[in-house]
Length: 212
Image 1 (tube, rainbow, N blue to C red):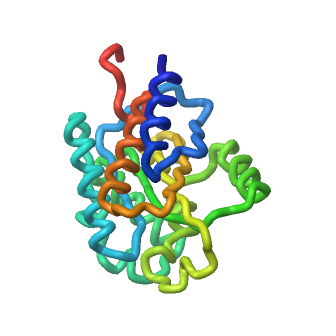
Image 2: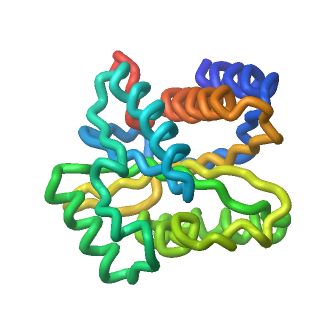
């Protein structure tokens, strides 16, 4: 039944400009519940970032999951210049101190050829990818005006990370989603969020069914 629901979700979004093209879940995870989630939309445009995180927050609130926007948590200095791994470790610890146990990170990235994508998949399977690694690799999105210059095709990635105290801090789920030249940015953003939420619900990630 869950596969049918996910397929229906993909078909629905396929009618617009949004399409889930890859879906990876940590094979050691059956279900994952979070008490407090940080929502991070990596974007240079402050208005786009705020709109995206606000819409995502609404969906979490509807489902009675406590979530916070990164724009309300991150200091401005974090996103306006390059940070080191040590500095990001301090950020992660501060999130733990505030009782966050998960991060949902979304970013727009350039397209990769198939060979590079296969290499990326094998990297995910070692279960070692962390939020800090992802952020370090892509932090130029915030401040580097030339970040997108080498890309001709774009896709988006949304990744769920566990930062639970005393547990393995690693990637739980990642979805790769194509956005095909949307004419209406607001609708594309809404469709994207619906697709991400639907995929997470379908796989018992954060939004667990009543049977649990």
